[in-house]
Length: 497
Length: 111
Image (cartoon, rainbow over all chains, first blue to last red; front, side, top):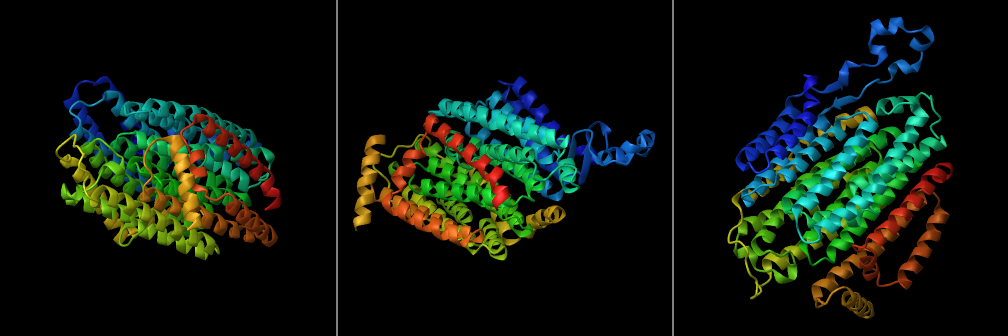
């Protein structure tokens, strides 16, 4: 059932268009949105792994009839292995990611519907359009197709911030768009260089051309192309120098929007990161440059998070800092480190969504995110407090949660690869993440309640608690049985490395 | 407590320029942790260069150590640079673009 593969992109696009048309008709919009959010992970599970050739255009080498009609010189050349049309590939790793994407979208929308009586059609449109875009980025084997969806994902992220309608969100969205007007075209230019050098935008074709020396692997055109694609990757992931704007957009969105935005960022990071690794992994400088930016993201993210007194900003910086761990896994470049990187990406999606939705309940209750104005909230709902504490533990890498497993795997991979310094840094940064979280938790929940603390709402929405609980259960299950996800990742990477 | 006082005064100065919030022990403990993280991670990361060249690594560690010590406290400077200003962001974006291109284009020949 390879025909189901493109449905993971088509279904959310149709849903997005429908929801935009149905703006104002809340009941039907809610039903459609929730059904589609459930359908996406189901398609991911049901669809067979394999390739889907758009238009049925397989490489000429697989089409005996057509191959026989070609001139001998052409039929015997390597060109026959090139992909003439866009190709989508589905493997266990991609299934896992799209499954978790569907879960996060479903829980975020569930919480959103519970909080707001009137729902925004444009917001829903942007959420599903973004979902389609990041799914396509992960599925496609065509780097130009990836760029198209990269731009759509960037625009939807800008739109989601605008639709969040919080203080300063318009300014932040505009800044993100301006920076995107540098990151996007530079990525496109990089793809142009690759196309110029290889003559194809299909990633498998590019890898094949480089491996079979059809093009010089150290050609200046390819190297500049790599530099530009790498720069686009920094923008899409939110690694330095884009860490400030990325953390800012996370802190300006509604909690549900922030959970969705982090998921989108991790997806684009993983999709482009894998494409870069497949194409340029042979370059010695590849590892160095990725490790450099990973370390920068980790140190800047965590050192900025620890000084924040606004928990939304703190979470924004922590989310960016965690991206550094994913990049570090990619940078070390071994099978186990890449598995750890992908595992960390999976965990990052679940944990940051949990924390954004969970901490969102505090903002919902009090209308403030300033930790100095908060305190004593544990008495209000101890269950949520405990769940958030465990979520923070998962983020910092405390056993038995999933964050512990991925960070342990990262430390082991760094040691195995002969980089004990990186292992020390991972442990060090995790300790500071733990301290940052405990500091914020103490300020919000444990210190005496300020006399002037006022409440905007009386109770936490029940579905927000439900969402946090589900995400925490995923953290725990994956923490105890990491092979549920790591097996699929390792299997995929075994074919690449 | 010379380092602590240095950090405290510097934070007061920066906070005064940004907003009127009072400076609490929470701020200072966070800033101290941030400060130590930056110093330790930077120096450990510099040791990584020994995989490429031991001499360069030693040289960079000495330069970094001098730079970090003479520029203490670092965290207020990082906070200043990591602000919401579009101009600052653009500056670092362009700087990074230059660094990335140089590192990849010439780095391949020497690494």
